[in-house]
Image (tube, rainbow, N blue to C red; front, side, top):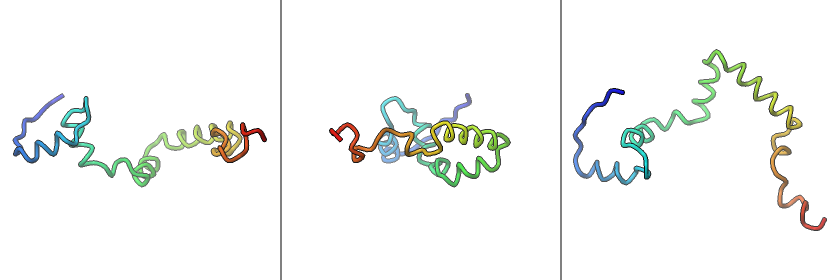
Length: 88
């Protein structure tokens, strides 16, 4: 992987260091800050609409939903308000 050395002032370095998680590189911190829009629902939809495998992906997701009874909520753990496990 190619690297490039940059110079930043101490204030910028301190901000960057403060945003850094324990084992995260400065490159990762910068990418996370400068490219947050890549993690949006709109970005996902764009990716699915422009990727050749999107139909395959959606078909696989539909199979999972059907296998779970067609209801994603029902496939999750029971609601604490449903009375299950509370002597009902």
